[in-house]
Length: 200
Ligand code: ITT
Image (cartoon, rainbow, N blue to C red):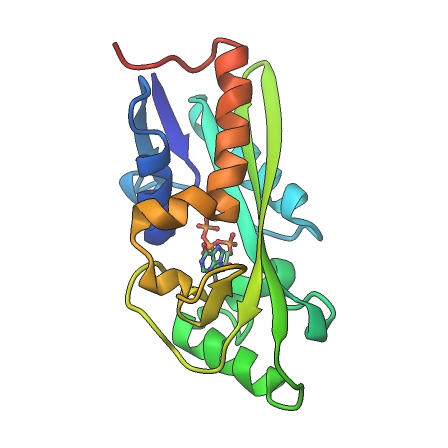
């Protein structure tokens, strides 16, 4: 079965390909589709934005689509950056700029800086829409550690861990992350409805 993962984010793509290995799936991303439309993420929630991505891409190509809208929510910042995580330091901001802005905003608060990652995964085809959620709790630290992953991974330490997400291997992050939980919930539902099958 051919499936489009409606993302341009190479970090997400690597994780999701690994999570769906073993299933009868050929996963394309928006980087494989040169005529992919621009997606206007103007929803107010992760769920709205995830469905905007999957519906827009399904409407264009007519191939089953999954999407992921995710972000970081920091307690002392009343949930920011939330749905604005990718553009926290401005449109086209780099991960480094977003991380530095976050640490600036947190500099007047005492540690621990409790935070959670949230992910809403969605699936759309001609007669099905499914959404699934996942969260990962932890805290933001003020030094950058690790080279793996993407986004806020170098400054996020999951609960009960002493390493940042960027110090974990992909397989380790995929055992605990918000994205893994959301995608595994989505996977369970797709298997139940016989939309997804194991590779034989
Ligand atoms: P697509 O919309 O093309 O999928 P994006 O990076 O713009 O890619 P989002 O709109 O969902 O994706 O924004 C998610 C941002 O939240 C992402 O750019 C990171 O800054 C952050 N984020 C989400 N999941 C993360 C993770 O597992 N590790 C680190 N940062 C993460």
